[in-house]
Image (tube, rainbow, N blue to C red):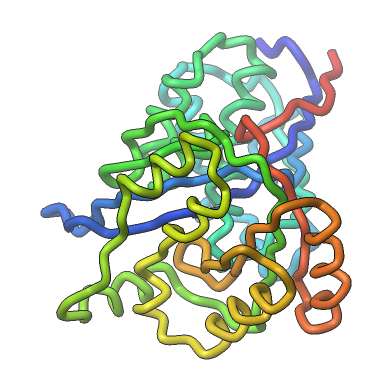
Length: 297
């Protein structure tokens, strides 16, 4: 039985401040060293329980899947399986989709993670974040991070996470007018004979000491080199021209972010670049993967 009939949550996006591939498992999953950061750009999930039965996804974005292939739907099925919960009515989820797709910002994974949190609240199952992350690990490599949120070193196929201090800085995110398939990005990476490597220890030391400029020096994403995209390189260049300490692609792309010293410089860069990119947003770090907006009995 549900505790609430309506639950609304924010699903925060993420940026990869550092990403390296360190191996491939027998099942084909790539083993990663990556530092991910939740940011205050978000989708909104509005869950409502009514009389009847079944599950319904609602979204006005044409390219948003509304069937069982959607990670929100998969999260609902996984939650029922792991908790034995009977929804006891028709569950509808209306999605306000703001995070861009195929951008490397964790849009699908963050929606999935927020769905697990929302169901945990709606049905009062009292699962802790570690258990929700465990459920999420079977749904996608980025889901455990998106459940836990904040700033974390993620290893393995994404299921091993360590909490880190958060950088205190604004980011500016732009998305070139291209989309990059994650499987295709890793396929291109696998074809590289001698890929570049990150300096993880130096990055973590800089992050831990709060030295923003030093952290930016060691920012790295090995999938940038696999993409060989002129649009990605141009976006990185433009962000640095507009004052970013450094810039990098997030995830497998195609979104690119710049790190700025203060809000004013990030805002100035936003004003310069918003006419060049259809998606151009400033954001700040947040310490969670989701935020509860409201509940109704």
